[in-house]
Length: 202
Image 1: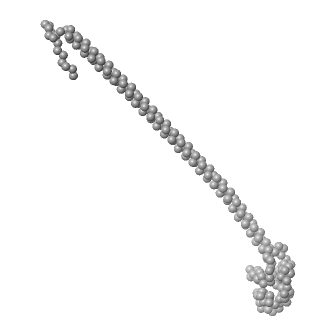
Image 2 (image 1 turned 135 degrees about the vertical axis):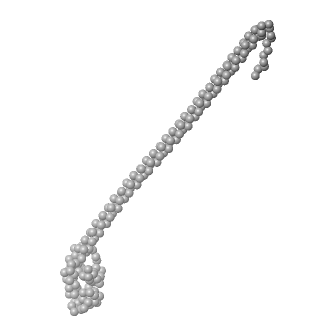
Image 3 (image 1 turned 90 degrees about the vertical axis):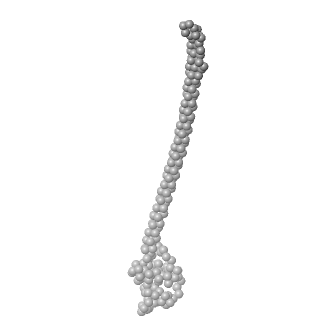
């Protein structure tokens, strides 16, 4: 606070010139203070505007970076999704192709089995042919009808038969049984009799 100003006293009061000078001085001081305050306010406002502008700029940068990161994440997620869908589609196509191939293999195996079964069944003699074949064997090897194991024990028949080449016997049996496409080669008479007796038991 400024020092108290003293005026000279005159007859009718204070000196008017000194009072006017002091008032002018006060007026100038107040004016200077107002100018200083105005300049300070202006500087403060400019500084505030600068701070606000920098904050807004930084905020925009942050938002821009966040948007870029979001776009990159979204792109990565979409790429991963598309890749996964593509791989699943390829796996499905491969699995479908494998299923088709497996189905074809099963069908081919079933057809082959059916053909083999039909061939075997067609090669098997009927009841009459079996009896005729046994009768033929009896006639060829002169087996006595009174033998108790005539139809059931092929070893007894083999023991009583004469020696005959195996391939000739197979040809005779095929002609007797009238097999169109034999699927089993008779290597010896014992196997033949076992097959015949098994057919009769079946």
